[in-house]
Image 1 (cartoon, rainbow, N blue to C red):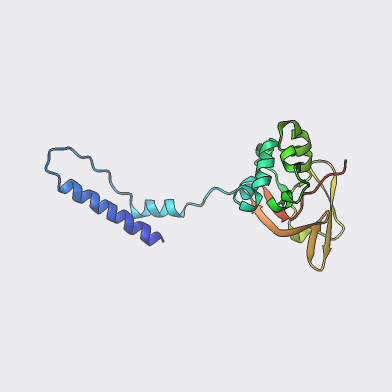
Image 2 (image 1 turned 30 degrees about the vertical axis):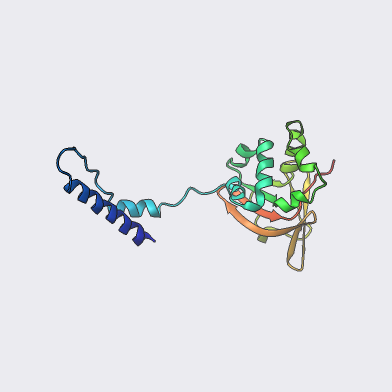
Length: 186
């Protein structure tokens, strides 16, 4: 791939020189030197900025409802913060499984407090990797209540929600995908 990019840049440089050389002198052209192979290689090889946990969710087509909810609750900036955080991220299907009208109601501005409580119930301070979880373990959420971990036959659940993907690492924490929306006790 890098070789193809370098070949394309070389072709552009040669084409530019050819057009300048073929000019009849009526127009003045200024030639911009083509970038060196080393410059191109550095730009192509430069690592992308690390994704935080919000970016991990944004990059997932299965979490558009969660991203909309985090945005509506005003939690994007918080979850882009230093952390570290562990997020149990419900999928779009998990939100769809809620009673009809629940998501629409929660996304309304007047429901911001209730939405914030639900979303912060899915977040734990610190990085909790799947390998660190123990059967019966309780983890305290940012909302203030606890979640209970259950492990049976190698399958992990959080308050009964199945963990379907684990340890999606971001620059400020980790995301575990779950198949249900967790609701805090009143």
